[in-house]
Structures are given as C-alpha cells and as structure tokens.
Amino acid sequence: MISLITMTKTTGGEIMKEDLKRVYEVFPWKMRPGEREAHVRFRHLVELFKEIVDFPEKIHILDIASGSGIAGVAMMKAAEERRVETSLCATDIREDDLKWVHKWADLAGVSGDVETMVIDASKVHEIGEIFDIVILWGSSTPHFSPDHLLKVFSSVALTIKDTGIFLVEEIDRTFRVFLTRGYKEFLMEGENAVSFHSGYDHTTSMFIRKLYKLPGFEYVSDMRVKMWDTPTVAAFGKTLFRNVKIAWSYEHGGKECGDVIIMKDPRRNIASEIVELK
Image (cartoon, rainbow, N blue to C red; front, side):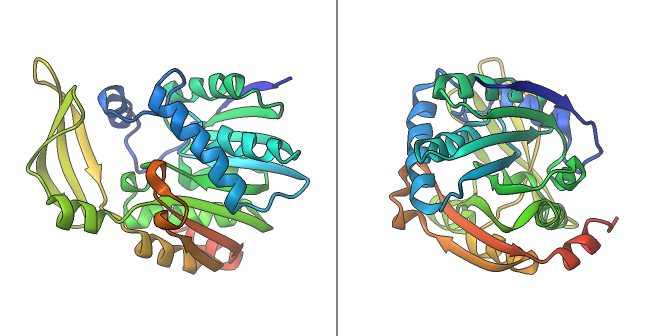
C-alpha cells in the first residue's frame, strides 16, 4: 500500500515559480497520466533504468524538478520489478504538478512510500534526508542559469550517499537549436502556443522568450532559457562528483529519452562551500 504524504517547504529561488506555472499550463510537454505519449515514455524509462542502474536491496529516491513525477515513479517501478524495496521523494517548486505524482504511483502499481515536497532544486540538502538515487529528468536544466545549476549539483552532492548515483537527462541544444534547426525569432510551441525572442541576459547567459497562447494571442509569460549541452553539464558535474560518465542517447535507443549523465562519488567539501555562496 502506498503511503501518500504531502509536505510543503517554501524557500527562495532563482526561478520564478509563477512564471513557470503559467508556462507549463500551455507548454506541450507530455508528462501527465492519461496522455498516451506520457505512458509510452514511462514504459521506456522503466526499461532504461533497469538497464543502466545496479539496484541495491533497498533504495530511497529523490526526484528533483520532478514535475508530474513520471521519472521518479518509473525509477520505483524499475527497481520493484527487480524485487527492490523503494521509497520516493518528488520535489518541485510547482505544487500544481506534484499532484500527479500519486496518480502515476497508483497507475504503476508501485508499493513504496511516495512523498512530495515544494522546494527549490538548489535547496534539497535542507530536506535533511540521504538518498541512494537522485534524478534530474526531462527538460529541467534549461530553467537553470550556470550559477543556479552549480548550486543544484552542490545540493545533490550533500544529499546523496557515498555509494549513490545521480542521473541527469540532457540533450545538446547547441547542436539541435543553433545548427540543426536554427534559433527562431518566432516558434510554434506545439498547437496551442507560440514564442518570440525577446532578449538575452548577458549576466546569466539566459535567452528570454515571450510565450503567447493560441487562439487569441494571449500573453502567458516570459521564458528564461539556458541552451545547455550534454558535455558542458557533465563538466559541471565533475566539479562536484569524482566519477562522471555519459550514456549517449544512441547507445540506449533514446527515442523517448536524451543523453544520460551518470555521476557518482560526491565531493562534499566543495559542495558545502558552494551552497553557502550568495
């Protein structure tokens, strides 16, 4: 039986919570239970995690910037199919999306405890728990400036066991956006939204785009986006973890998933200094 515990911890953060809430109300990201594409992705994630993770007998999972919890629950399902005892803490700054975590757990039929918490990803060390597996999945990293991402990784390094594993999904946006597709002043975001280039913040290296809902051309919010690529994010990881490698998407049939950065052996002395920086 699943223990459903909902905790809320309000903290400051560099990401504007209300902006993200408005963006994800119209953005075409398939991650909720009941969406066919989301169920295909969920099953792919279960098989991927069984392939790349060596599970101990019992695992405590932290899913940061969790959204609907699709990846965290998929990790639970993968582990339980290997007869591993599980528990999950799914975190995000968007409380509305966290309500879907328990729905995913119900649909997946997982037996471990599921907990949700509203908290900034750079503050997860304040939860006060130690985890075996930490995941940062989906299109999460573009929301983080370089300074914020470094603090996120540092917070994880203080939260994970010495023998734990930190998994980050990433794609090469430098190649996909600038070379393959070309950066667009005007871009359709699925069928119900459109975005326009609005500016660039040189202090954070974040692109700024204005998002409008269709039909009616109703302004939704500004989107601040960092065009990360896999090697750069992995290099950030090497400052906080001694063992970092990449499972490229072409190595695991990544139609439903990007590259996976696998980090182990946290450098806590460095991490403890970085999380205190203003």
